[in-house]
Image (cartoon, rainbow, N blue to C red):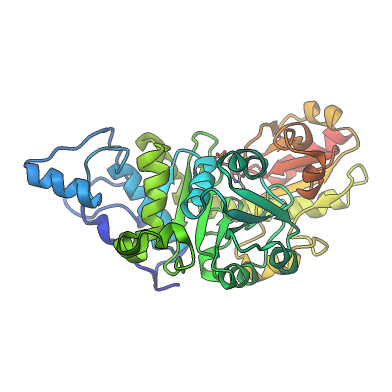
Length: 430
Ligand SMILES: *Cc1c(COP(=O)(O)O)cnc(C)c1O
């Protein structure tokens, strides 16, 4: 899929924005895509604070309302959001992206793009708390059921049902760092006529891993984390790949000549995701937020490479520390997903690790550099006690399945110097 189109076909109205090429490295793509070239064209993606766009004739408006490929109303398209979508598509190596207001909006949109009442999702149990909440509590309200399984191809295969439309996993699960065998999961999903959706949040928008290149069909992610990168903005996105088989999903085939597939062709999946998440439910990303996220993407590679290196050094140091219990980091050879990680990750093993301390409520308030906050991918190192916060609302067995115990501290490593982080953790453990 490296020959994915550098830009989607409907992007012509972005000023000369076709500057992305599939040959560019991640770093070049991150700073160059979505920006025009020419006299007086802005450097960087400008913010279009606009809810509506003008037409000159009745016919222009009528055509736009039929095709929905240009500009009319900002719930359908906004130039700033569209430029960000171009950049995200290029970074993930996909065919099209829909940017949304949060990672949760992206998860819901991904699932509703392929499921309706009576359908079923298979997901690994090692999940972000908000996703397990959605699968266990929200989707059943709409008649969609889910089976949560272990992170192995055999477990996923055993959980498949005739009505399974989507297999779901996180590239690097939050917080346990479990890495799925993406290619094997894709084969299982495809053999059942289902799609594989991957939450790529902790792999940093295609920098550590591009799931579409390993056979996934959809990549969903929170842009709040490494994309925004500075703890300042919420966002999410859904990127669809260039090849996926929807011919066994009745949502796309019912309706005969009017089926979504017949009307939209290869773009059917992306069209339905945009129609559902943005046009109909209005979970749009605001242009100011799109601008901030686009700017965050420009330094993502530098940040996540450094943060991954610091995380690996900290994991080794914590393992050797007498005051620390179990350390879980997928970069350590003892981690159950280490082999999968070596196969699908590049540039490092990510910035999130967990470790156990004897008394979290005594440890956390003693920290002077690390901050207690429930975010990931910030420039600052953040810690939380997942048992009572991020995973506090899900059933205890599900917390254990996600790698969380009452003693677990989750850390998202930032850009501070390794020695300062070690000194701070050391003094807080004493
Ligand atoms: C944070 C997170 C989400 C949800 O994203 P929001 O932007 O907070 O809505 C989804 N998946 C993972 C893995 C996350 O870490």
